[in-house]
Amino acid sequence: MNRETTIYGQLMESIRNKIISGDLKIGDRLESERTMSEKYGINRMTVRKALKYLENEGVLESRRGSGTYVSKMPLVQGKLSMDDSNHTLSLSALIRQRGMKSTRVLLSMSRVLPKGDVAMVYPEERKVYEIVRLSLINDRPYALQKVYIPCSLFNDAERFDFEEGSLYEYMQDKGHKPVRFRTDLKIERLPEEYCKIMQTDRNKKYMLFEYYGYETNGQILEYTVSYHDPEYTKFSFESIVSLDGLG
Amino acid sequence: MNREFYLLKDYDTVPSIRDNIDLNEHTFQRITLAQNVIEANNYISRQLDLPLASKLLFINSLVVIDEVPRCIEKIYASLAEVRGLETYDYSDMSFYAILNREKGISRLFIREEVKIVEADDQERELLKLEDDDREIMLIKGTAISENEKPLAYYETVSDTGLYRYRSVTSYE
Image (cartoon, each protein chain N blue to C red):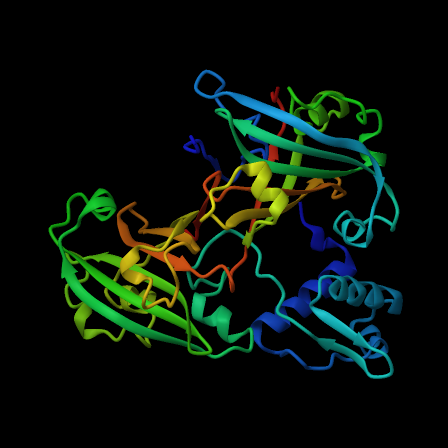
């Protein structure tokens, strides 16, 4: 099923993509209806319909006598995922494109013995790297990530700059690339040891992602546990369900 | 209170606890709080792509699992699409099961948005939340039929342990 087969739907998608990619920024004025109508060779009513729907979504804002402006980032829809493939945006890219300043701080990086959930993910590994990073929006803590990668495959991770650099760039340099991802979302309180750094109290609940990246041969390359402040986070989920046989 | 049960929403999970719970393992009860025909306000009409004041079937229920209230469901369905289903008893069969049985709808495209928000007084009372438990999960969803018509818009408010999500993506 593809809702974007309609012309107005395609125009809406095009405008959304321009905002997400940064071609259009919040506050930018769109081309006039007439200009778009002539440019794309489509009916002006179709243009108006597309703009109206985007206004209803809150993405655009019409100002009388002035034009139509970008007012907010469209919701990035799709599967729950935080990878940096061309299907979804990495966490930092998403924050930047909302017009907010995003920074990342490497809190710690060390070789550790797999324990608990990490040991269940990496039962054969003697040691894994634990990379703990803090993401900030406008200098305020937003997300805490704990990334675990196997030392047997990535034995010199200490030499890479995980504060500025991309994890997947490093993995690819080492000849490994996750191609299949499983993402689990649940809601939990932050572990007590991270409350201070996240500037929060013990009772606040966070969106907890557990993120598994697998290579083509099925080997697990990455296990990430990521806590997101719900003040800045909403996620969307799509599915196709069969109702046959219910009840 | 026993809030151990959770529903894992995967790529093909029907958004109804009733259709996903093992009644040999858990008890389930849906209490109807309201069920009537209403007119769509501006927000709901936009979600369903309907004119303002269109007639809707509105079903408001409290779901109790293992004797504990776990979520409050509100379903707004376009009456034009579900005519004849206004007076059904939804306490035993889910809205989706009845759609399938009575309207022959076999597949739905589901789009949900998930947030954590602070519970209001009524929600706290209905869900019997503890004093230090301020937050709830809010799910806003749209069910779209195979002919691309939005069929129902729903809002589910639950304790934060009731739902989990899983997605699998492949770029091979």
